[in-house]
Length: 618
Image 1 (cartoon, rainbow, N blue to C red):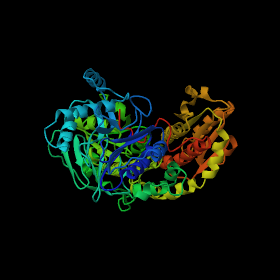
Image 2 (cartoon, rainbow, N blue to C red; image 1 turned 30 degrees about the horizontal axis):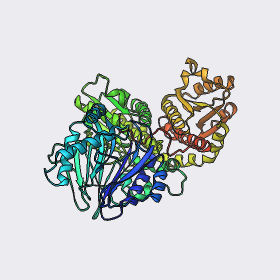
Image 3 (cartoon, rainbow, N blue to C red; image 1 turned 90 degrees about the vertical axis):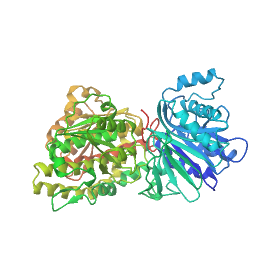
């Protein structure tokens, strides 16, 4: 959830570190800091609570120089957002600096022991405890080799004493031009340059300087100089690694002409949806081609049950996937919140296939669900956007979204890419079972038409903005939908509360009379996802019930459904499509509604409070 950037080379590190932190600042954080080695007798440490600009202004007044440094953006776990709790943290001697993503679960007994040994702590964080522990281990290695080998040994020894998750970067004044990194449960990437090398928690931070990356595995330890690197495991043995070519450019992670990343990514969805199905449609077979599943046709036909795991937006995409797979392939499918799956004793027979869904491929609960399913002997496939991510590496196969970098904390294009990919999976499995050639071709035709239909909806952005501005004083909103669009209602409500901080809840429309209707009032608008499908009349009846109680209604329906104008206060039309694909169109107005609402209220949509882009700690 936090951000790490490290640099060792021949250039001034401060601009590189700040640029990297800037690329990560939309992931969510509450303080930032840097530490550099400049050949003097002390580490140059600068850190400030609040946004990155606070640190940048501080560095103008108090510059820090050096060609070797580490930096960090913090998302608070232990201790509030203050200058003292910001990373990097130093050890007792002040000669060692360290940044950390993750949680040290046994930090309190370690802290108590070091207090008894005379240590003084400056912060309330678990991270400072590990910095002191590494420093203590380093001192214990005195006379046992060079400063570099002592630092490596100290990191190994300290990490052997902790319980928890970590992605760390460490440096010591005795070893200028030398960085040590390690990971367990929290992502860390090595970037390889010419006469310079990098460490980062996300490749986006370093893509401006290199496209060659190594995604570390759990229990990996790396040490870097400007000209060399070495990767081992924590115990000291050799570690397997692969140098990957990053598939997107630095420009893809820039704002361009858009005021916010969220709006940019909403408008990128025609392309990201097309990228999700590009090269994966077979007209001859009227089916989809998903070679990355690493399953033969006979193995796919043997599947009796599918479990889809995800968190947040990925969970909502999985819910749409459940409807798709059961409708098109008639395979019993269920959706599990990843954090619940890992702690449940869910009965799974041998022919159950598990899918883990995560944009980043690093979501800690989803990764834990993957490992739990594999531990029980099940085949687990990943559906991720990040090539080289941990879920991609540890799964038995899967599908990449190819959506490009998603910077905004509120997921938009990853949702539609996930649903598109799940539609391809449902089509593939359906054609193996009962879907006719004609039915398959109809679905292919509609999938291919999706990008242009999304472009058509995006032209309504100003219209949706005017609707949003009508409700700026409302204390909350209700989102309601049926069948395929019940998950769409959940996703629309999540987007609204994520970035505008008002109460919003999603519900199945038919549940209205089972308690939800008590929330209906003149100040609480209801957003109905009511396309022209088999349940349109049922949705209209629910809308009438809301209107009878003077509740405002925003309706999203299919072009030509003019009856909605008679009963709804505001109507947003989407192009017609197959019922099973309607969430891919209906969610676009909901994304725009939340975006325009939050902007009009003055909220920072790319940096919503308390949120992080990727949840990498439990």
